[in-house]
Length: 169
Image 1 (cartoon, rainbow, N blue to C red):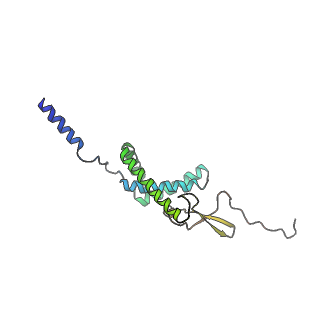
Image 2: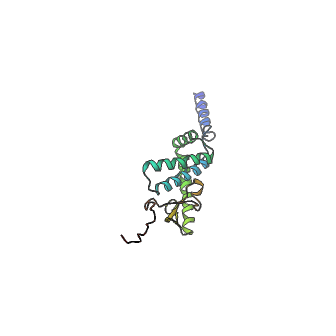
Image 3: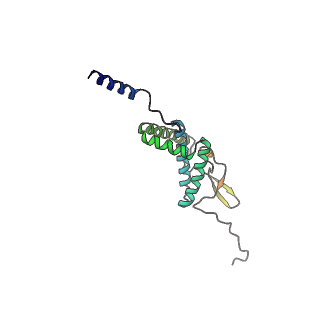
């Protein structure tokens, strides 16, 4: 009986020592927060373009690949990490909380600048040969900055300038 008590105490002490460390190849919480925040912003940008499902998926895939490269992780590492955090709800909750906090700060800053929420209406109109066009960030690194490239408004479509008929026919 005396040995059973010490064995149980030893097992309890072993199970309580140290943190539950992620296995090798799991992306840190900080990197996951940054990656997932940018992925969310990219998804919102693509969604607001009102493209077909196939076109949206292709464009988002472009953003996704750029994010993997930017953060120096592979799809396999991301999947391993995501699955690890799904199995560890406390850590996943910390990640989600940090993402929400970060997006809240971004929203506050954008409101101070007189802009809308991230991913909603952050485009500027630009006068071109073919009329007004919306400027949208096309690169994941531009999503949090002012856009530099112009893209036609998907709702208006690109319409050629109407030529006037000199005879009035």
